[in-house]
Image (cartoon, rainbow, N blue to C red; front, side, top):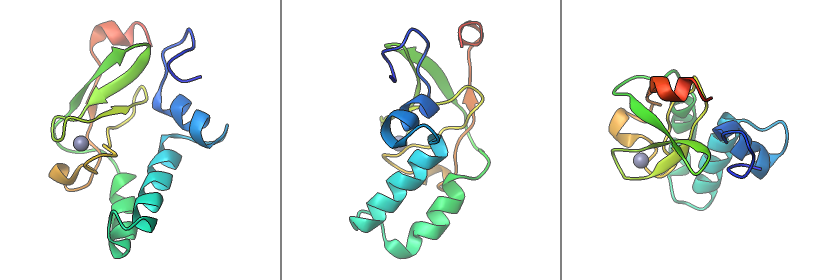
Length: 118
Ligand SMILES: [Zn+2]
């Protein structure tokens, strides 16, 4: 279970807890954006472009990976949110949708100390 196992919890671990054993971080992003559109939190007509951008290759300023209570996360310096991340993954904030980065994921830097743990 995400954050409670002996191993460091990743974004894919969190997605599996929420959406089933085949789920990944991308599943979580898709489900989140679809739900936000259904609830009219984002314009439905923007959904296809937002999904395409959210799942594209990262660009822009990197965010820094940290471990918080046995979870691998990164803080969003644009809105103050935080997201579960994957080793070698990218950062997409489900609070601000990376609007400040044109809606595209950002790269993540993994400090050397973390690389030895995860
Ligand atoms: Zn954010």
